[in-house]
Length: 263
Image 1 (cartoon, rainbow, N blue to C red):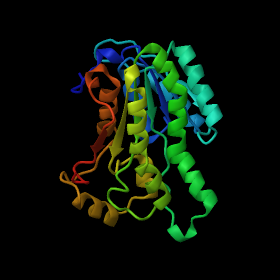
Image 2 (cartoon, rainbow, N blue to C red):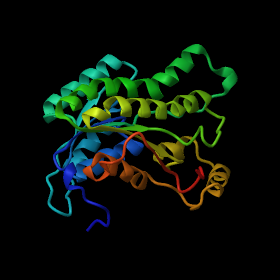
Image 3 (tube, rainbow, N blue to C red):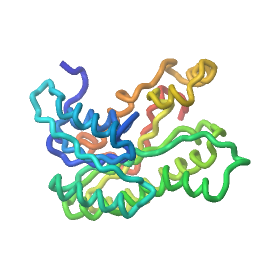
């Protein structure tokens, strides 16, 4: 039996997750499915997404809660019209929308001297712009329902003054501004908006593209708990924010990084 929390309020709750085919996003899709939520997600990687949806549908829960097969749509988040249309379609199919998780992002490394205007705009489109337009689509649906939880993905990169992806770090530093602004705007409708901020989460992509023994040693030395942080333990703060258990939390930033930032 799982040693982790079960959230009755998440059973049959409609959830939309961006970038859900791999990494933290795939973990979120699986964990929400295990809670009995109705999950829709989008990504570019159709093969990985369809495999994940089938795997989730075969899950067995410790308390016998029904697992719904996640709904997947292949789309490019830079096309905000497609994203908004899919959120509205998913809500129609699921009978509403109670949770939006703005998870998608891309932390490609780049040298500041090589950045062009086009690349700068693309990094903002991939890491920030879609979050606002997803809220623009989900917000009115939640307003009609009289409640909702929106969870935006931030990053500790700018807090740690990491300098190997300035466009990414700048975009991610703006996420909390989006969160607090929309939390104030949507609060009268009982819609909560929060940011979750991961440290270096050891996903397959991180290990394949950015890992080195020297880099890991340097990073872990900055943490209070000097071990790797994994997607499952980071993702559980998102479950809590989606559930009724966090009803008093809004306009906040929740850092999960094993004590690396030190705030």
